[in-house]
Image (tube, rainbow, N blue to C red; front, side, top):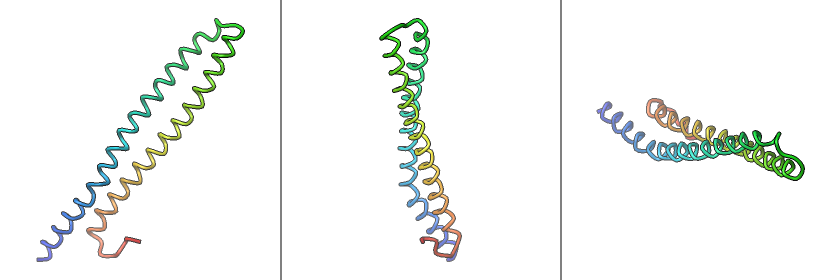
Length: 110
């Protein structure tokens, strides 16, 4: 009887852990999109930096301004990647706590 109750408890924990797993899938797909965008920014910056020594006057200033904007965008994307990674880590912690709570009799809901 006790083993049946434990099996039911584990089955309930698995059902509860399904939603955070879908959240992890969403976070992973957002990370793919953002890293692709960062790669495009880096490619564009490298292209502009390659043309920078050949430019003079107003074109040099415009390309310099574009490089500053690309740098700013890259910093924001790096922060977003860090936040998505932290969110994924926290979701993993939640899933682990759900499974550990099936084996620990104390109430850890606080």
